[in-house]
Amino acid sequence: MLIKNWKKDILTIPNLLSLFRLLLIPVYVVIYLNAEDWSGHLIAAGVLAVSCLTDMIDGKIARHFNMISNVGKILDPLADKATQLTLILCLAVKYPVLWSLVALFVVKEGFQVIAGFLTLRKGRMLTGALMTGKVCTTILFVSLILMVMVPSIQKTYIHLITLVNFIAMLVAFLDYARTYFTHSPMIQDLPDSETAEP
Image: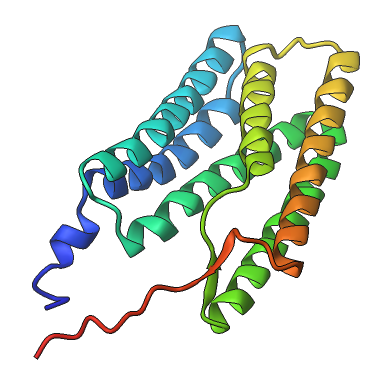
């Protein structure tokens, strides 16, 4: 049955949009790292804006048209995190102060992967993104896309943006740690998977 329905589970509009976001990553990298004037940076920011837009609509499509799949539950966050890491890394090449943000991002996401895996082994899972995580992602994309658009941004603003993102990311990290290490209602038992048919 799984083989018969693989197209229905994998080749959905939300999953294709997530895949599209992954394909946009090398496009952004090439454009940004080779941008020599404001127009080049504006195009790079436009690529990121398209990525953010597809991220906003794929979840709505999945819920509205009942296209939620296990593949999508992996592909969507993978596209999100890969895009975020690429954005921070590219900017860190130009603005070294952002390497501190790269380090915290790797620690935070590494923790979530390990904690999520250990929780799954116990038959439980985090039911959704925490509000602090959503706020952190919003701040990161808005502020860093602004940095991409304005290559002549002053050093003071670069440090301020880095600090704001570092604090938001640290708060989200601590919130996820608290959620995983306590009996949070956000951590729930997995639904019974006894769906085998004769």
